[in-house]
Image 1 (cartoon, rainbow, N blue to C red):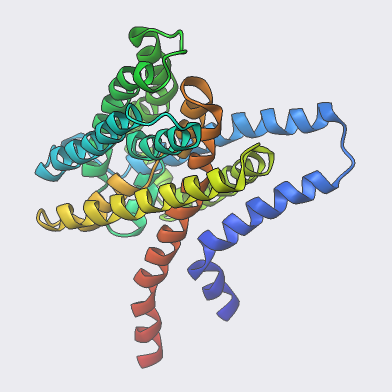
Image 2 (tube, rainbow, N blue to C red):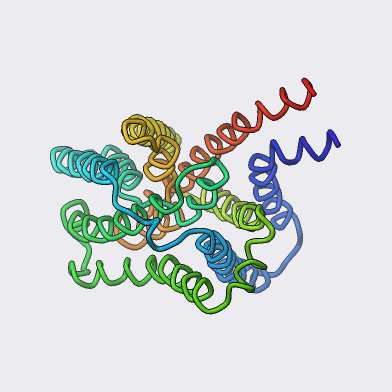
Length: 322
């Protein structure tokens, strides 16, 4: 029983350790280059599939009318856009390459939209999944616009137009967000029996997310190991991503508290789609900026692990009292 409780309380850290260990284990094997590339490609397909499944299961638990716009959503959109714009302007004033990469990396942490998986963690923490889903759609749309607008300013060598950049981001993000929602709404309307069956295992989306998290950490470890970055720049990006993570969770919870949704707003602002951040770094900015997405993956999941542990602590006290 104690082992089961331990696994439940520390599921996120254990999942992260498993992902990191899996990468180094695969590296220790004498596999051919083709096999290693096949593994990387498999992960690239499996991870979105897991996210699609867990989002569908999560959205089956909410109704369309639950996705209402709230005041905190507009405040957080303004905050994230404002900080990103400030960093973009600051980037224009510096010429040192290390400083420019650092500012691009930090800006990316603020521009990056809410993770699709945030709905699963928010539900586990007792937040409002409907409000978070509405914000996730808004922030993804805003991120696509701002990234497309800021890229020519911070990376003038880029050859992509605003329209093409916008379309590339929308095409990558929205299918994984919209299709599960539509599928869940269709299931809710045409098959109540299937809906009850899909929602009969309350923690199934969370279990799927743990597997997806392990894969994400394995990918993050691979990126950090292979990144050709100096120690100084690595330290700067690490610090910038950590400060960005702390700021966004703190501001999100502070703003959300005034609307009775501190947990929801905190997750909406702080938990990021780091896979997208890594892709944006490689595609639109200096490739070294993708390291920021890798570090941010660690920070926001460490904080989520702490939140889940804190949420479960009263349960320990209750059982001991009984």
